[in-house]
Image 1 (cartoon, each protein chain N blue to C red):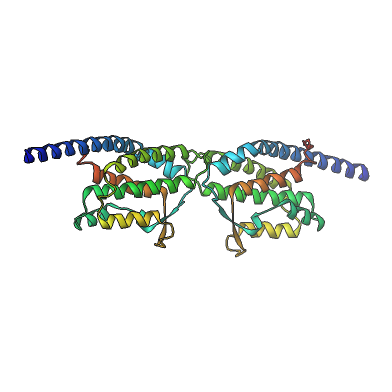
Image 2: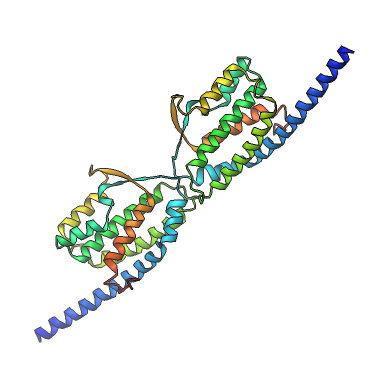
Length: 180
Length: 180
C-alpha cells in the first residue's frame, strides 16, 4: 500500500499546488491587464512631472537580465516568482507613497497594491520555507530599510516596465499565456 | 489757451491710462478667479508628487514682504505691478515646463500663460520706458538665465500662493476689488 499511498499524496500535493498556481495566474492575469502599456504611460509618465524619479534600493530594480542570471545560477522558478512579487510590491508601495490621495494616479497604484496583496496571500500558502538562499537574502535586503544598500533614482514608469517584463518572463509558461 | 490745452492733454492721458488699467483689471480679475484656492490646491498640490519642487531664481520668489519693502523704497505702483507680471509669467512658465502636455495640470498652466500673455500686451502699451531702476534691474535678472543669482527649490503651489497674495496687494485698490 505504501507506494500507492505515496503516489496519492504526491498527486494530491500536485493538485494542491496547481490549484494555488491557478489562483496565482488569475491574479497575475488581472495585474497584467492593469499594467498594460497605455495605463503605464498615462498613470506613470503623463501624470508625473517630466524626469521625475522615485528613489529605490538597488535590489528593487529587477530586470529580465537579472532574472536570466539568477536562472543560470539554478535558482528555482518559484523562488524567482517570489522575488518578483516582493520587488513589485515594494516598488508599487514606494510610488504610491510619493502621491497625495487626490492625485489621479493614486487609485491606480492602490489597485495594484490590492492585487499584489492578494498575490501575497497565495505566496504565504506554500512558498515561505522553500526559497533559495540567494532569493531569501535579496528579499531580506529589500525589506530592510537600514540594509544600507545603494539607492538610485528611477522613473516610476521604468519601475513598472521592469515589473511587467519580468512578470511575463516568469508567468507566461506556467500560466499558459499566449506569447502574443 | 495753453493751460486749457495742457489740461485737456492731461485729461485725455488719464482717460487713456484708465482705459488701459480697466483692461488690466479685467484680465487680472479673470486670473484671480483662475487662481482661487480650490484650483491652486487641485492643480498645483494634489496633482503633483508630495514635496515636489520647481527650481526658480531667487528673484522669482516675490512675497508681499518684498513688495512692502519696495514700497518703503518709494517704488511706484505701476513698477511693482510690472515686476509682479514678470515674476508671475516666469513662474507659470517654469511650472508648465516641468509637465508633459498630457498632465492634468498642463492645460491649467497654459490658461494662466495665455492670460498673462494678454496682460503683457497691456503692459507694453505704456509701461516699458517708465520703470524704476530697481525694478528694471530685477526684471532683467529674472530674464537672464545666466545671471548666476541663487536658485532655490519651491513647491508649485507656494509659487502661485505668492503670485495671488501679491496680486491682491497690488490690484485691490486700483481695480476696486472688494476686500472680502
